Image (cartoon, rainbow, N blue to C red; front, side, top):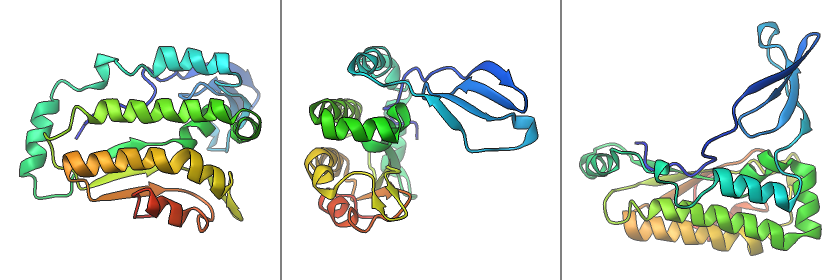
Length: 217
């Protein structure tokens, strides 16, 4: 069901900026400027030229224009009907929970986010806190009105040798925020399970996800 919208709203408009021979330079839905093979020639991994967020000022602009906590458009018109259907459904009911690291990585790039984690951790925490508040603002509209069985998260934050940030930072910045969401949905909507989709070697983070209430990898 279309529960609530917790992502960029609006997303960035896909825009063709330049044609470079066999390649296009475009702005994608996350606001990044990328160079990639022209679609009619096949698919390619994009080359990222610039990301939407490089500075705190960039973040504040994205936050204020596209991540408003009180945007009424985040709530679908048929939410009450969807909640009623969930109570009668005989199939698993799931909800999209989004991301704390993965979205920031898309908006900033791995390198800039890694720099910020080391040099400006308070800023990263501020961004993750805003995303958590955005989730909870939406899920409060579901409280006591629907049945949920699982929440789905997306966090591509590991590579072939391990995580892209230390388990200590993960435990400090992310685990308590995950827990606020997972415990809220469990308490208010009966949501017993949470699932995370993450690439790479997750061994060091898996026990911390479990601690945070995310029990399916």
